[in-house]
Image (cartoon, rainbow, N blue to C red; front, side):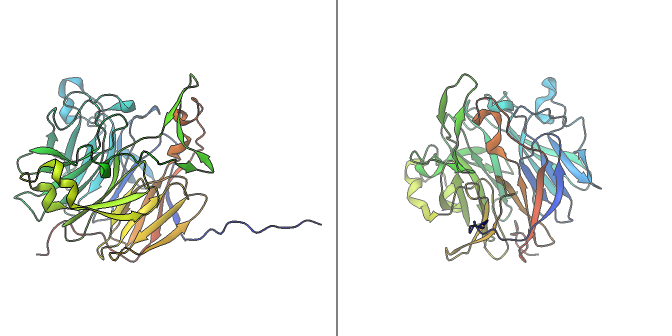
Length: 367
């Protein structure tokens, strides 16, 4: 007699928006008009273009194939290896270029934040960084914006370094002046006691030569409150959630050594890669250890809204004008670097979405 034993319960409704049969994507963003952009960092796959728009069911290099062709003679105007793309809700696509293919030391002048005009599909402005901001160990990961402060707004970027200090990089978008905050602080650093377990197995660096090392990546996920006053962030190698006043981040009169006193600890939310906030102040975060997506309300209460075996490493999140939460699922943990050089990923990778009945958090005030 065959006995069917109880099994884990899966729940949550989502649908596939796009399937990827080429290189592995990391980032996604949906503009205020519903255009969808994705990016493909150069981590070893054959990447023909590192930024693309999904147009009529196919990928189109964005804003052009020329912009996606790294040009050593004009490195600031061409994309090298893009980790994140963010549409700001006001006509601009922001492209965060690590300048660090295969997690190398950033190419001099290659790490940058690029503003692309969505009306003309041309590069409008490029922000590069000094050597005291982008260190030899820096890996620019994700970015959030607030246009209510300063003359042109501010950007906040996570440095998710695997071998140097994590940090939040603050950028004055008027002057381009940038500076590191919470540099090497506990809140931006990997949790030394964190032992990630994905698909029931411990995740760690496993090299072709048989050597191993812990999975250690610094500040990664980042989200900003609807009023722009709080920045949420988390190291990739951690289950903890933190926030800090953006005013304190921008205030250079507060020494970095004292800035950690302004950090608020929210407790465990699961191990997250991507995070995003909605207009109601809800924080959405992935949990890559449990194939899940969570929402955290402003009062700190938490609920899992999707738990499914197909959510194999939820990476970047974006909220569209259609009130759907869009997210990339890319099997990041199955890459060769974690399996002695064996690539365990199975195509296709996917862009999924689930209805959340919440609009994107605004980046500017009304009127």
